[in-house]
Structure formats: structure tokens, C-alpha cells
Image (cartoon, rainbow over all chains, first blue to last red; front, side, top):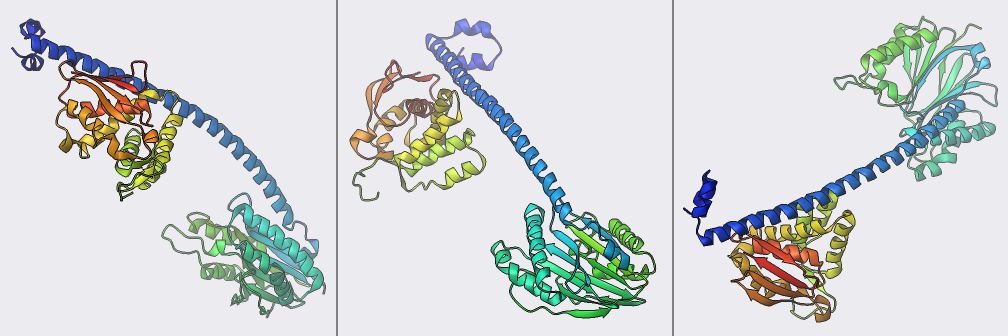
Length: 308
Length: 180
């Protein structure tokens, strides 16, 4: 009986039949197995210890991360409040002349859409709608910067084209440096008309059954120095003006189709007899049913001239 | 390092570096992007400064609170790879052969070069096949526990021995090999 035969069978009682040489083999085989187990046990114990240490480090890092996250959350909440404070709130003079409604939603706590109401040096009321490239804190900071620049600009010039050109010239160097730009839609209201400058922004005027889409061929603010074009359209009692940013019309449904300017313009036209806030609500309801998810900041302003 | 002259600083052959790095990856001592970067850095046909090897040894040391069993396993894994995935099988046929191979001109001496005082030596002082006993005197700059693992892994790799152990016997440069 050999060692191999015994090991392959199930009869340990026959070990006594082994030769001296086989008994020696068995001895070293056993010791070798023990040594292997000893090494493997030490290895796995060390690995296990290391894993425990790694988990402890991970726990500590998670706690640090949670603390950092909390700090960021608090900062963002403050940033949100600051940005909210930068948007117009009370505008009784505008309300006396225009019936209007505003929807403004940032995708995150702070964002890059910005709108404001102004009283120009020549006494005209005006609205500016801007969409800063990107999202989040950096876009919000650019927004604050643009607002500050606009305040200075308003003190210098009053025509929409001059305002936008002045603003662009004052900011293009910095915006190029930080690789940001902004679309602009600036509208100044006269007695029975309005004049506008549109660099990448969106606007539509509904007069009865007629729909006038803004000519948006001018450049964005912050790309290069150049002259802007100014256009004039009639704007009388009953006419409806809608200004908005691309977050609305470029939102997609589950098939990947855009909400589209055509759909929005048709909706404004079809509801042009309603009060401004109801037109805006119809637009938002339709948009809400259409889009799968918000993909960008959204601003929509619907405005109608009140009867004199 | 192709003219055969001794370099002024110690260098380690890329094949040895690659085996060491691959063993670290196999044992998950490094993983993910670090593992990819570690392996990508090593060209098997080049010589590397010994400092590069020491960097990896240091990384292993810093990764574990109780590192000695890991170092031992690392050495074993290196030689398992060398035998089963590398040239080992063609070079040795029995476990005991490895002791002669590793202490000969094709062993450690062939994968580390430089000033004698810095690369040291790896010599078989005693070899008794009957008793299953050998003594190696090592003054190489490599970690002695990894070196013990290399000897265990190399001697065990052919699979003809039941028992292999290497101890330091109090003197870290004196490696006592028991094999049966």
C-alpha cells in the first residue's frame, strides 16, 4: 500500500502499512500544509487589518466630506439669497404701464439666467434678459458682475443699442478671459412702440394674429467688440410680448424632440387674449407636460401694455 | 545599459521590475488607475534606477500596518509568476535547482547591476540536498522579507517539494532554506 493509494482512499487505518519513506513523505506533506496555512493566515490577517484601517480612514474621509458638503450647502444657500436679491422685486412704475408676469427658475441653487427692469436716462422703461453660459456659482458670479456693469452703463447711455454696445465693450475683455459669454435681449419701451437689441436671446411679439419673432442675429456679449443692431416694433394696448431664455425652448421630451420656439409662439398667439399671468401659466403647463427633465435655467416674461 | 559596462548607480532590470509590479497588482496592493500607471511605467527591456524599485517597496510598506506577511506573499507571488507565466519553467525543473539558479550568474546577479558595494551579492554558502538544507548569504539592497518570499516561491514553484521554508536565523543577511 502506497501513500498515494491511501490518500486517494478512505481508510486511514491502513497508514501503518506505509513504508518508512512514505511515512517521511507524509510528515513533510503535513508540515508543508501547516506552513502554507500559517503563511496564508498571516497574509489574510494582515490584509484584513489593512482593510479595517482603510475602512476607518474611509469613514473619517466621509465625515470630512459631509462637513465640507454642509459648508458648501450653506454657502450655496447664501449665494441663492444674494442672487435672489439681485433680481427685481417691486416695480410699481412698470406695473402702472404694463401688465406682466415672470417665471424664473434656476436649475441649481444659483444660475446664469438674469433679468431686470430699468428706468433709462430718457425716462423709458426697459427690460433686460441675459443668459450666461454655464450654470451654477460661476454663472451666478458673472451675472452679478454684468448687473454691476449695467448699472454703470445706464448712467452713460440710454438707447438700447448704445447700452448693449457699451456693456459689451466694458465686459468683453474679462468675459473672454474667464471664457464666458451671455446672450442678451434688451427692450426699451416707447409710447406705442419698443426698440430692442437681441444677441442670441429670444423674444416674440403677438399683435392680433400676427407673430413677430425677434431678429436674434447679433453676437452674444463677451465674444468680440462690434456694433449691435437695434430694431423697432409697434407695441400697443392688447399686444403681447414674451421674452425668454433657451432653457425653455431647448428642453426635450422623452423622444429627444425640442420644445421649440414655434410651439411656444403658437401658444402665446392662441392665448393672447388672456391676462399675462394666465398666458404664462398656459405656457408653463404645456412645457411641464412636454419636457422630460429641465436641462437649463429658465426665464419667461410675458408682458402686455395696459390701456392708457 | 547595453554596452555591458557597470553603471555608476545601481539599476534593476525591467523584467524584475515588471514581475514585482505585477505581483503588487495581483495581490491588490495597488489597484485601479494606480495599478495601470504602475504597469505602464515599466518597459521589460529597460534598466531602471534601483530607486524606482525602492519606491514600490516603500509604497507597499506604507500601505499596511502589518506588512511582513504581505512582503513574504509578494516575493512568493513574484516567483510563481516567473515560473508559470515567465521563463522559469524552462530554466529549472526541480525546486532545489532554483537555489543554484538564483545564486548563479543568471539569477539575481543578472537583474541588478551597479557598484559592487551597492548591489551586494547573493551567494549559496551551503547546500545539502540529503538534509534539505541550504544557506544563502545575501547583501543585496532588496527587502529581506521579500527576498525570503522569492526563495520560498522559487523553490516551491516546480511543485516537487512538500515543504519549503526560509528563515533568517537572527541574521537578516543569512537566509536558511529548509526544503523536503
